[in-house]
Image 1 (tube, rainbow, N blue to C red):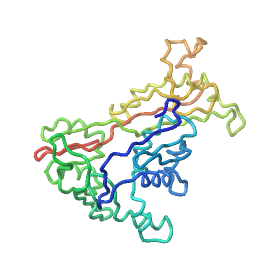
Image 2 (cartoon, rainbow, N blue to C red):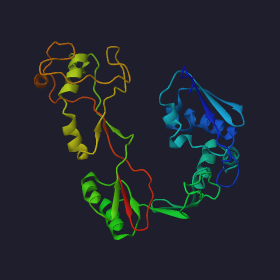
Image 3 (cartoon, one colour):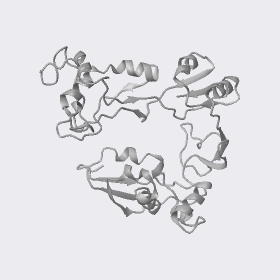
Image 4 (cartoon, rainbow, N blue to C red):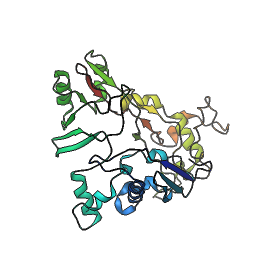
Length: 319
């Protein structure tokens, strides 16, 4: 990342190959990112909207020129829609239009990851085999991945998935109900993993000056919105909605009012009773006279599964 935050240099790892054996090139990177930021290629292009241009500096270097500094750009480059694809193979896929080619390519996708899709029975299962061209090696010096193949079964019912897990019929599962987390944690035959997530739950506030009936909107007052934030029992909400597994956010993510805290600024700490953000005495108990139910924009970070090693005698439960 450049010092001014307006460019990102990507250095290609030497020796990386796609799963059919062809080398990954700077042209593949440029083409993939240009496609990913094209509005015609899908809704996720917005995550790369800060990119002005993608340039190839040399065969091993790609430079992203940004319209403005973007603190999310590195995270955006790690999402699924920016996975590098082989340009030549995509363009050689069946179909007369980019959309038709994308559909055909998705049937037998080719990437640089540790596994290759070999069978896809929609709504039933997916099978993957080891990618013999995968570039990464393990700490023991042996090539990764260690497993020869994987099978993912689609089991919509929570209870059925967990019964199969405990019976040893499957080695791991995800999307565990909150109510079952503590039970699975206590099972000595399972390893229950909780990981940070990008999943966010929130409530939006209407802060327009006037309501539809023409009356003034009390939520257009910045002090009222701040008071709602102070009044909200965040831990109680987390306990009710996620059984205590979530986490309250402390960052203002969206700014639509010049008087609101700048993006990225931490929310002010809760004042003592009767002391608001400007000392004018906003008391949370009085909010019942302002709105029927004190609500504010709240975000609860929830755990999410991530891959982990699966041992022969320890089945995995992820949430």
